[in-house]
Length: 330
Image (cartoon, rainbow, N blue to C red):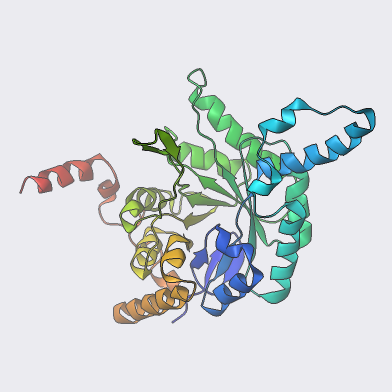
């Protein structure tokens, strides 16, 4: 079976990609990911707070000569709260490129354009094959309108796009009021790929201790429907690659996303649950299904159930909503 696919112009031997997560902090893990069939690896994110901390550390050194120290430094997380610093991240890119042949995609996580330009360039110089921008921003300001939120995303994309020559993907959240138009604007701003969707890690409350819990919940296969909808709608309408990154727990979700039109599917939760070797299991299950369905390649079935290609395009619109409700009454 031919599992090859193209993502943002990068040639991948498999559509199964490891999404950004701490598993990629170790080069040995990245090697294992390649050995077990990953088409590419998105490195864990370098956070804007880390970049700021690096800049402030240098500033503090300069200011100590005048016995002055900025009180604002206490606002940001300490460097110890992050696993690695900026230089370590760049070293990881270099080491990974020396050890594996699959594409290595760097990841930046932040909410403002400042501080990203130079580091995006350094990631490119370190050997990253592409860059994923994760704009982890929740518009909690009641006075901020939707257009200003969209402009923030577009400004970041334009800034990074003007800085590097490697492909740039944007990891989107599903909360834009006009998702299709926003996807289009991001591509016009320079995005080579769209990653659907970012899972905002929402807090929980401990009702006994009255504390906010920041516990992590792995994604579930039931979460694929929203990104599946939008990938199916956007397929063939944008000059950009589409990546699915929610709920990929098995080959079943990989297949569904590919049928909808995704170029790649990204997984991390499944690897935490089953280990990195599970990549091989997913690959074998995908190949088995392709053989049963007589598909010789991924390209042979990619997008066949997208809105553009299905016999009834309204299946993705209001008519299908009515059909679902009618079915629930039976």
